[in-house]
Image (cartoon, rainbow, N blue to C red; front, top):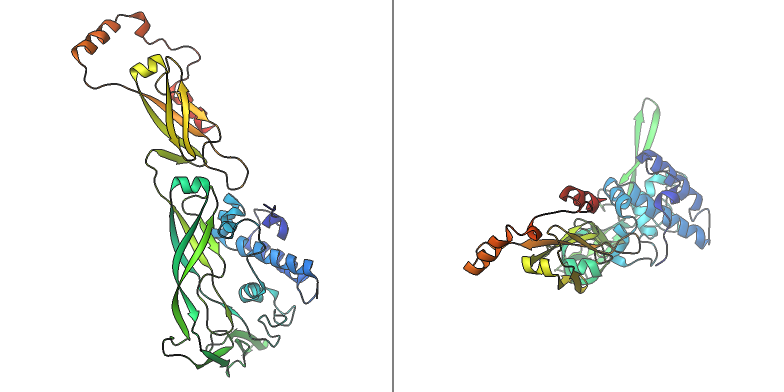
Length: 375
């Protein structure tokens, strides 16, 4: 797994930076590494993409909060770790072209948007689905295959250059103000910014030349995801008409409740019930963990409320190596009904000094155990 540079470090800002400071820092980096300033420089192009990826996350309050909590794993999970940038040049100029202002003649280059003579590519809408995962799947990671209905361009549809914007995707408007004539660019209302309109389309296509198509998408989900986390599969959303790129598939994680394990962050909790006899004599027990069965030994005279910590038997961490622990809570089960012989035995035990509670100084109270558990 290749190590990724921190998004804040990429833009040169702190975690407390304001949205305006983040935008200003990104614009500075984007201009520095813009391909028009660095023709043929692959390293500059990669830096340009990396800065855009950082800005995409840090400029969005929801994404920024997830990144602050889970790091790169919150967004890289769907496509696996590493494997290059999520954004290409089409993504960048369709989403952030306005940030460059007039620094590069409208923000485009080499046919990617702006006013550089090429048709502006727009991005299709995102699709959103929910994937339900068991605790075992979360602990071990899983690959899920889901069927989604995507809008795609129909076979045989033909587009032509929009006559309103001449293929630019934008129209210029001149307004007279007290400060003089002001010029502004707005998205073309005829083609929706694609620079193209439909010339002909098959009968099964809608007014935009699109059809609905079923596609099976494979989603790689790493170990350690949490309920409510959103993963992104690039390019598996809807297409847009004309000269466009596909949107993304946003995958929301829903964690299913486990029958006997309770999750708390990366730790798991398990309630183990034993009889009075087992507590007095000691016993070996086999319990089910998320990675298979685990055998534990309970010593003679174990007390109800004892917590056994099994290191590394919990949920793997998303941002670092290692896993949480499995905390086994020992509960001594008291029978609700007794036979005549059992009752006689316990009645005799009432006066037996060995059965009188006598906690040692080292025995911790319930509140001390809870404090230790969360420390």
